Structures are given as C-alpha cells and as structure tokens.
Length: 131
Figure 1 (cartoon, rainbow, N blue to C red):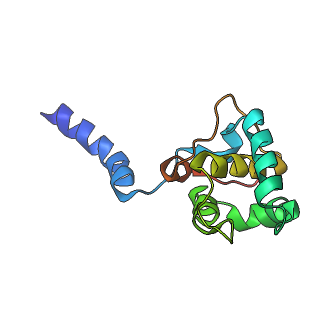
Figure 2: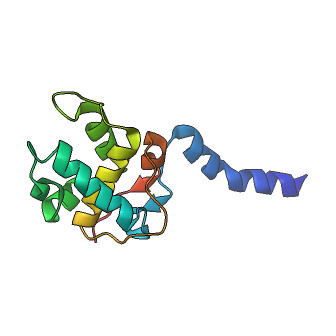
Figure 3: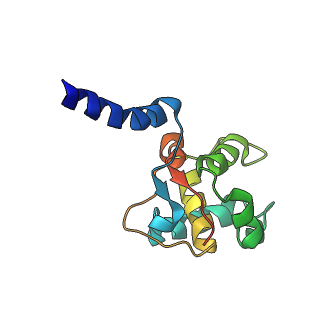
C-alpha cells in the first residue's frame, strides 16, 4: 500500500504536466528535423513565401531572442493559421513543418535523422532555445 502511494505521488507532477498541456519534451537543440526536410522547406519557402518574406526575418539573434523558451507550436500556429496571406492554411500540414525545419536550418540548429512532424501536437512538444 505504501509503495503504491509513493509511486502515485512520484507520478503526480508528470500527470499534472500532461493534463495541463504544459511543458515540452524536446528542444530544437536535439536535432528535431532532417537536412532533407529543411531542403524541401527551402524550396517551398522560395515558391510560396519569398515573394513577401525575406529569410533574414526567420534567422539570427532577433529571431532566436523572440522565440527563446517558447514552444515551436507558436511559430506553427502563425505559419499554418495565417500564411500565405492570400490563402491562409492552404499548404499541406507537412509543408508548414518543412518550412519550419528550414527556419531551424537557417539558424544552424542541429539536424537529426527524423523529420519534424507536421502537427500542432508535435510542435507543442518542442521548445525553441537559443544556441
């Protein structure tokens, strides 16, 4: 009985984080996208975004300072909910993820073997951190 109580007490903080939707499980410093995905994102960005946006807006100290400590989902929500301006939300979910992977590459965050998943839930589990 005491053992169960101790295990239950140990799991309470974990359950609170899950139930509240708080917390992230990974960082952009963990290699959360692949080089191939970033290359696709660059192509999509050049085709769909570069007419209105410069890449400098999505890279460098100002970009990292603005998003430091926030979930990648905040960038996801803006991109997938408001872009492109003439047809918001018109890209495939994975295309938005590819573009975000490109932003991470622009900021020289490390690549990994797996691709960044194109879903809000996946983005919510990844925190942006300055290098």
